[in-house]
Length: 132
Image (cartoon, rainbow, N blue to C red; front, side):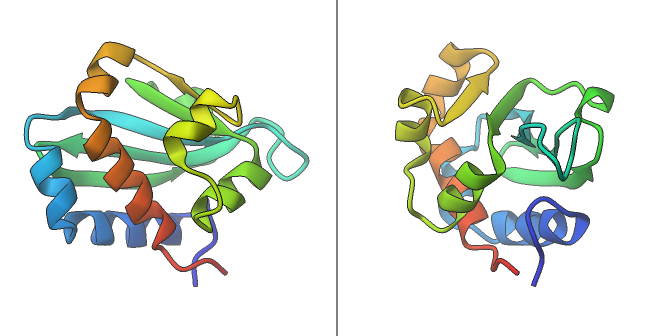
């Protein structure tokens, strides 16, 4: 089973997101990319994450990023490793996590608000990728 974040996790996430009809419908008009970022810690002093390229309900690419500075992304969803673990176990709602400060969302918030159902479905799919 893949750990988050990793290449194996990214590949499994891409596969599952592309199989998710609810996401495809909610994201029909969406074009952009996301970086799911784990904040710097002892395991990854610069942080690490998964970058996803999204286009009209399809995930064209998902890849592990060892150096977050190496990628420019329209949106970044950032949290500590422990908060990611809680989110991926369905212990935290992804939107409420932004409101309580556990996660930060950077990017065009007006655009993000138009696609909240797609974003929520994307994070629900992430939570379905089996952990280690």
